[in-house]
Length: 276
Image (tube, rainbow, N blue to C red):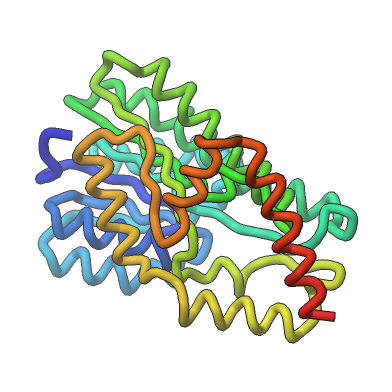
């Protein structure tokens, strides 16, 4: 995008993590922001910070898996902001278990948020983006949208789908004033592990506690992820890789798509043996 000053950005999953950090950074860069999250109370603090910057800000309680609610959201945002320039489809969840142990209800829940939430956001905001002087769509995939890993079959399914959808949409919108960026974070310090659904052996207290601790203490701060996302918007990047390991995974998949299928199962078996 040529400029961010005075633009309107819509961000889902904006109450915490990458969504909140991206919302606040976009506001510092001059954007007005529509903050969207299922946790409406969690939007109060980022809204106050953005308002203190002198930006127009609105708060919207939204379950992105609801088609009708997302349709309503587009109308709500336009009534407040009279236009949209940037859409960040960030809201996401995960479920941790082997596919065999995972209830189908958890798989369906995850796909409804991670994939359908992105589709609904693009579908219902695209008309407003078409009318804008310039626009940009950011869809959050993952490094697990580049390589399949154990205990994340549903998450990988959703993030591979977001990646493919984003690449197709970018191709369709090529030559228009709307850019599309697919974002692939590795480990970022968010609430995704603490809010995950667990099943089977992975539901054990020790495994869950260790995973949540690692996300809180060892991962990239969301503010750093936000910087790369906003840079991707400015430069109309097709893909943004975030955090240590993301570049290596992308390189391995480009070099040899089957190499990861050789490495990952062996690493997983070693991890399972250590947990036993």
